[in-house]
Structure formats: structure tokens, C-alpha cells
Amino acid sequence: MTTCVNPILLNIALNLSSNRSHDEQYQYLIDGVAEVFPCDASCLFIFDEAGFLTPVALKGLSTSVLGRRYFPKNHPRLEAIMASRKPVRFAADCPLPDPFDGALLNTEHCIDVHDCMGVSLYVEEQLVGALTIDALAVGAFDKIDPMEIETFAALTAAMLRNISQLKALKAQNQQQQSVTQTLIQQARSQHGDMVGVSPEMQQLRNNIATVAQSDFSVLITGETGTGKELVTHAVHAQSHRCDKPMIYVNCAALPEGLAESELFGHVKGAFTGANSSRAGKFELADGGTIFLDEVGELPLMLQAKLLRVIQQGELQRVGSDQHLLVNVRIIAATNRQLEHEVAAGRFRVDLFHRLNVFPIQVPPLRERKGDIPVLTGYLLEKVRQQFNAPNLHVHPKVLHQIECLPWYGNVRELEHTLTRAALRAIRQGEHTIMLSHFDASLVTDDVKKTSRYLPDESQALRELVESYQRELIEHALTKTGGVWAKAALFLQMDRGNLYRMGKKLGLTK
Image (tube, rainbow, N blue to C red; front, side, top):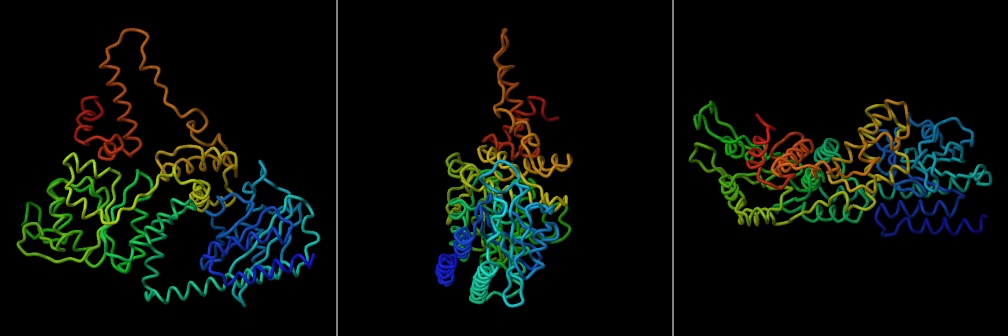
């Protein structure tokens, strides 16, 4: 066995200094595990400062594992591995729960009995991660030489050290102060991570990295629930303005009559109720970034004033003759087709071209092949932490069915659906989320029954049409949290017309 193992270990050692990306190096090493050891699954973890084990590469496990973070105290086997400097093997009848139950591939059931082994990874005296291997056959690890797995662990730890040092050098080259890094981490913690392994998500990350360091205006487009705000925060966090404020403006929620004041400020006495001077959003964002969410909702009058700020960096507070200069990077987002809005005369063509310097299209979830398992693991982690349910997972068959759904509400719809199913499972004392825990739309055909609109007896066409319109509007309001402006976007119509239709149909007072 030694003669066939040594060349593999040597090849892995030689490739530690290759030009592969970090993720590729992680995966290259984990792929080598199966060549060295008789196992069906393996996972490489990085140990972070918060005390969590984060999977970075795996084989033989569901990709949903990559969306998780494991707190060792909640997983006795991982805790035992972390507490030892030597490889730890668990007997096939070990009563301790396996953190990967329900995640092993090539099986339809949760595996409660199998060979499991793990080793902690140290660089000198610093704990940097862990490596686990699992085999479905009992006794598969009986002939493993402990020296072999210790050698493999040493190579893995060396790779983690090399990657860590490379990251440190890149951080120095960026010449950013430690406070900047803290702000970025806080922003990521508050707004979440961009989770996904699909080519579409990689292209999205590449687009963000391409434009982030410039001062170009960015127009982010995409369907509701795709994560446009998350993309905005990523652009700002990677820009040279990341230590300056990023001011958020919801253009659809700007109060009528006060919208100009909200954006550009006002002086005392400019209008009734202006008891003192006030800076607008653009002044607050000076030196940093302003995020104009739902920019397609801006009235034409404000569009003209916004254009002046973009072109000349100049604004006037309401009621003032003084011109103020601001240096602001503009990021705008919309789920509308602004080209159509321009053609319809609802959006200025010159403003559109000023905002559309670098467009970023956020892909819908149904086009992100392979991302749903990872997102499932990531989104359920919130539930696991909130309700102290570290072993909660989705049954593999259910996960496959989830992947087959269109998810027109995108990531937001997926998150809400998973949360509801998880809560039902927790309430029933279950660790595995089954199909029965999900909404009925996942169990039955998700096609709305419309036979009642085909009457057997004579009925006025107008009544049938109005009944259907009423249900459509109610459905749109439910989908958008009862906000008429968003419901209008959902139905792709003017919000004023929608409101008048709703009033006519008795949906408003």
C-alpha cells in the first residue's frame, strides 16, 4: 500500500504551490482523499475566529453542506476531533450524531451506522481547520495506517497556511486600514453573503469586481427577490469608497411633495413645516455611495434634478440659491425594463444612459443551475442557529424536488418557503424536513384551478373578468407585502391605474 500512496502524496505536495485558485486547491486536495483512503465521502473545514467550522471543499456529500457553518459544541463528533491532535475514529455503533446525516450521496436514507474518522489541522500551535472522511462500509478504516492520515493532515495544514499567507499579502497590497476591513465584515454580516456556485453567480462576481474600483454609475437590474441590494453592498464593499457611507434611498417610498427635500435637502422656511435646515441624502453620501433602489419610480421632475447631480456633481437645497458640490458614486436598481419606460415617456433617456454606464443583470434563481442546494444549506443555517436545531436538514429527495421548481419569487421566495417548512419540522420534533412540511403547492400541481371561470350557465362576461382581476390583484398584493406600488410592478402596469382598478373592485376604501 505504501508504494501506491507515496506518489499520490508527493503529487499533492508538489501542487501546493501551483497557480490554482484557492477553491481549486481545496477541491484538488479533497479529491485526493478518495485516492489515498477507502472512503465514500470527505469534507475539508476551515476554523474561523468566531469558533465555527466552515466547509470549503467536499466529495460524496450534498452541496447543501457548503452553505452551512458548524459550531463544534453543537456537533459532538466535530468537537471530539477538534479536541485531539491525533486522528479520531468513531465506532460504527457510536451513539454520537453524525453532522452529515442526510447529506451523504448515493443513498436515499439517513446513514446512522458507518465508519467515520476525522483529524484536526494545526499550523504550528494554531488550529486552522479539520478533515473528515466517511465510509458506508463498516470496518473500511481498519487497515488505515495512522501515519498516513497524519501525513495527509500535515499537507492539508500546509496548504491552508500557504493560502492564509497569500491572502495576507493581498490584503497588504490593497493598502486598506484595519477599520476598513471591519466595516466590510460588518456589512457582510448585516446584509448576508452572495451564495452560489453556478457559472451565472461567478459571472456576477466577476462583473462586481470589474466595476467596483471605478467611480462609474452602476445600474443593477433583475427580478424581485434576486438580491439586487446584496449586489449593491458588494460593489460598495469592494470599492475605494468602502470606508465612506453608503446611503440607501427607496425611490418608490419617497413621500409625494417631499421627495425633492429627501434627496437634496432644504433650508429653513422653504415650505410649511421646514422649521430648520436639513441635508438631503446626496449630501449625507458625499465621498461615498448612494443607492437608488427602485429608481424607475422617480417622477420625471426629480429625474431632471438627479441628472444635474450626476453630470455636474452640483445640487441645490429646496428654497436655497446656493449651489453645493458633492462627490457621490451612484448605484441604481430596478426590476423594471427601463428601455420600455424610456419608450413610454416615463423615464428620461439621458438619465437612463447616465445610470447605465455599467449594467449588472442579477440572474433569476431558476437560471442558476446547482445553486439551490447550496442556498438551502445557507438559508436553513439561520433557522438552525435561531432555534438551536444544529441537526436540521432537508431530505435528499425533497431537495431534488425543490431544485425542479421554478421559484418565480427567487431567493426571497425560497427562503420564506424553507423557513416555514423548517418551523413545522421543529414543532413536530423532527430533524429531517420532509415533503409534508412544505406548503401544499410543493405537494400538488402548482397550477391554479380556473374551471370556475368557465360557467356552465349563462353569466355576464364582465362579472367573470372582474372576478379574475380581483383575484389577480389580491395575489399580487400578497406577493409584495400589501404595497400597491410593488404590486403594480408585479403585474407590469401603472400603479395609479392599478389603484383605481382596485378601488373599483372594492379592494380599497
